[in-house]
Length: 141
Image 1: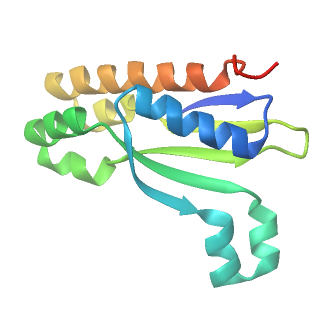
Image 2: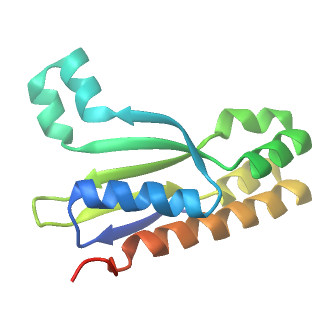
């Protein structure tokens, strides 16, 4: 089983990050945390480690309705929240990778019918956000 939903988009890192934030918001996700891995590595490990990872941000996305249902069904699921979404620069080819946790991972760990329903909803929303993130920007020509 894979544990991510991954797309590669033909856009700059900055544009992909902006579009991913907007697409997540359109699907009811707020960003609870944002970790700039490159900046953190630079501070903690030095410039060489930061450059090795490159531009890499982890967005802790949360849909409050789905999260409240998940925690009501199984309080232990909090260790799997929020849904992490990664935006990272490609290999210098002008492309950016966007990855989201596959919510079905929760189902594999739980098996609860309630958790399956919530994971299915979260999965549909994350897939829609990824799809929107990969579409050509209609405001640019």
